[in-house]
Image 1: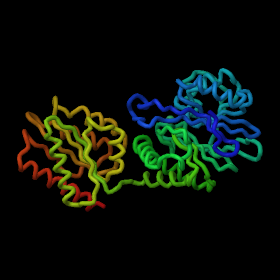
Image 2: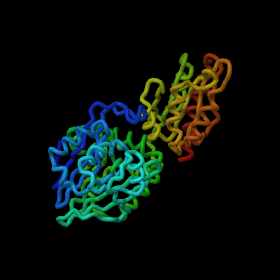
Image 3: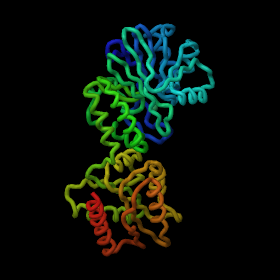
Image 4: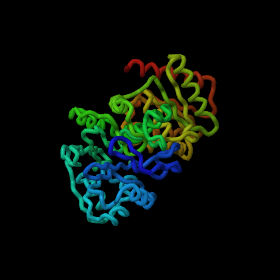
Length: 399
Ligand SMILES: [Fe+2]
């Protein structure tokens, strides 16, 4: 379906209501997602990005109903991952000579993935493409660690920023615009997307946004590649990104654990009790890693100023759910304070493993761990409560 978003600019993407996991099981998409593609019909006709490969035939068929494919003058590929470039092979088989504008790394990736020597036009930051009627697209390279091919493009006069993944969410809606959707859902999905996808490269993204803002371009609308179009106060999401990229935390401590016979769970509860005794207003959240969505837990860790992780020992290691969580955040560079806890029967092996993994993820281990042998005594419960109090105290002193 073609939906007008402003003047001669249209959304021609695909809403995916069914998807519940993205990139295998790395990201839960409980509210679906969208693959946003945009069509600009000025004197020149431009298509910006496409959709995920399985929707390719449907996308091309629908696009052909809305525009004569032979009238497309330019294709812009702001990011070459298959969820945005997946329809290019089908589309290019019909219009093989249409130039594809992308970055040098974008060309490398498209060539590598699709093995077709399309009519690539590589662009650098500041280069412009005239669309007629006095309008231009301006390109900005936004190379990121694992998205070196990324770029923004900006439509003059309409003041629209096409931002690719940045400022997006995995949120499916027929309402299209940020002011029309449920704001709680939007906020929740936007911070989840940032915490899970952008946070590991948050500082770099902040720098790139700063560089873009220095151009002093008016931004009336932001069109990302997933989720809603920001037309109501689009600067709100830019402000959020700048805030989130600057050692963000709320007044929250998160406890992630798993438990076999309730020992580690009981320690977690008593640690929470200790923290609460130190500060009644701090938001303490407990998540059993085997019962909670890992992306939700990462989001809560992102919102926290301190994190405690607990697991009993099993097979000389830690429980699988905690292990998966720690592996997921290994590259996240969380500069937050942390401590670990656990319990054991015959051999105390879990503590060292959790500490090592947290350090790898960027955490600062601020306390010696606590780990209890056999079932918990009253003394162990008191020690756990005191541990929570001390953890809170250390966090408060460092603020
Ligand atoms: Fe994407």
